[in-house]
Image (cartoon, rainbow, N blue to C red; front, side):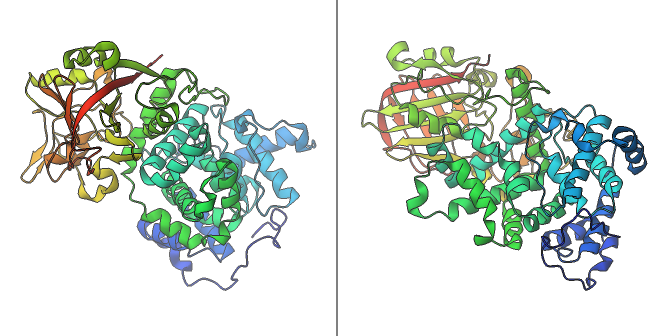
Length: 568
């Protein structure tokens, strides 16, 4: 039976009270359930959705001792007894975030607070989790009572499925998720990202609100459709939804609106008025049409972001602070790009590196036109940003994910190294970035098949980008370029090459350095070639980045700079 005292039925969307033709869906396989959830098959039948939620959540694998409804009744009666809830402080892990109420009555809101206080009591390890109030509030609309709602949320918190996570439970995990969303937004929403980067002092601050867009700003009938798929598929689905929202926001803007002064406020208003722009069906359709990399690749990215935050000194419990500083524009000085141009370039690089301030490693005006000096100044730094200004005043460059030291491992022969995070870009006359071709077309790759000798790491063991025995994987018609042991054992997510079987090795020629010169990007041409005197250069279309020439095809170098990251 429903508990109408928790729900204000007048606020609930119109429901079809007829039993659904899909009332049999409770016996479907997981794959069929996902399809039904995406299509909204229980969206108009309250009782069916309540039963389906119950079944889905009871099937989530959990830690052995997960508090259930009986534990809740016991703890709640001890905690609250005759006292009102208002005499109990809300748990600290909420971090002062908003309490979304959706279609709940005052009684419903009180029940949400009680459940959150009990979660705080029974899960002392949760130190920061701003998503919990919304998940509790949404589930309460479909729960028989507080105890059932508590048990279901407990199962999400205690889920121990190695492939699915639901709820970030520390400040560190939450920040890493925000960084991961920022990384995905740069790759999948370039137009929206460019708008945000050019109008915001702090791009990361804008992306940090991504969960708030979904579970704080969207109306109930949209948020609940997101919950349908989230319960079956976990947090990765939320990335998809937020990317689809971000894309749609950019598409809905007229040219006159591109001079936005308050992107954060604008995004918030867009989410709240989403009905004017797209239906819930359309939102889900768009979200699932985005071609993301595998869940494991995203997990690797998440882990690398957590590791960088930990290196930066961000702790599990730390409260929200602006530790995530963008380039300090006041003290920034380059002979090639302006501070504003560097801010845009900086906004393209993976989030975990932009935690650290840029440091000038090499410049031709200070260190002279010597390739050997360039190598010796850059060795030991990973990653680096290369900037080139031609005698014609054009500016281009590259983000290079691996230490130039790796060139020595091939014994002086010309071989390529680097990872799929490398990209090339032009700054003047046009600002444009060209990423690894497989980011735009992941369907061109095939995941490496598992075999007893070359097992891929499970998500429980972070991956170092090392080659299997023999240096590379090969099959009759797929080759990959060897990926050597990375310096400092750093996690290389996105896109340790060995996770992919590529149609040809020209598709992963990222960077190469010899005494004769440096090459960035290969296959059918070179995105950038600079000779040993750092004087003559060439740029062409190449298969690795699928880029046009970055400036005039043959050019002379006026200035060249290499920037690294002060990891301290």
